[in-house]
Length: 70
Image 1: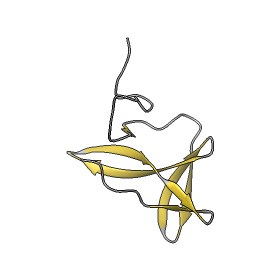
Image 2: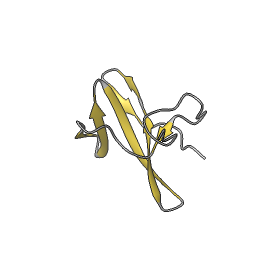
Image 3: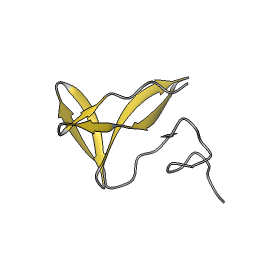
Image 4: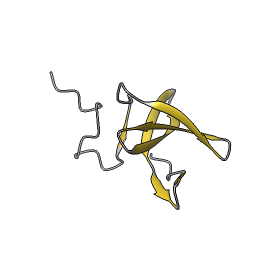
């Protein structure tokens, strides 16, 4: 069964997901924890009691906190 909440579904305009890929590592930049997997950084937000992970952009080698999805 297809789970639309799985890895980034292109139909999801907010571009967030409810689970991280299995091979992620936690990395800290400037006191902020990001999750890294396959060349992509993710930032966690808590929305309605659930954690969602949003892709971040990297500027000068450091990930930037993305806008909060709604």
